Length: 126
Image (cartoon, rainbow, N blue to C red; front, side, top):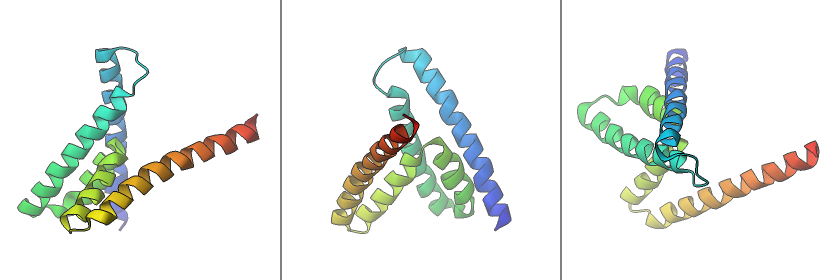
C-alpha cells in the first residue's frame, strides 16, 4: 500500500509539473487571453492520454501501472481525464442516462461548490 501511495504521489508531482509547464508554454504560444485555452488544452490532452493508456494497459497487461500513470501522472496533469474516463465507462456499460446525469451533476455541482466556496471565503475575509 505504501509503495502504491508513493507511486501515486510521485506521478502526481510529475503530472502537476507538466500541467504548469504546459500552461506556461500555451500562454507563450497564444499570448494573454481571457479564455482559458491552457486549461482546456491540458484537459483535452490529458483525457486523450487517459484513453490511450487505459486501452494499452488492458491490451498489454500493464494495468499494475495504473496508479502511477492514471491516478498520479494524469490525475496530477488534469483531473478532467479521470472524469472523462468514468463518463466513458458508464457509456460503454450501456448506462447512458447515468453518464449524462454524472456529467451534468459533476459540472453544475462542482462549479456551484466553487461559487459557494468563493462566497463563504470572501465573506470571512472581507
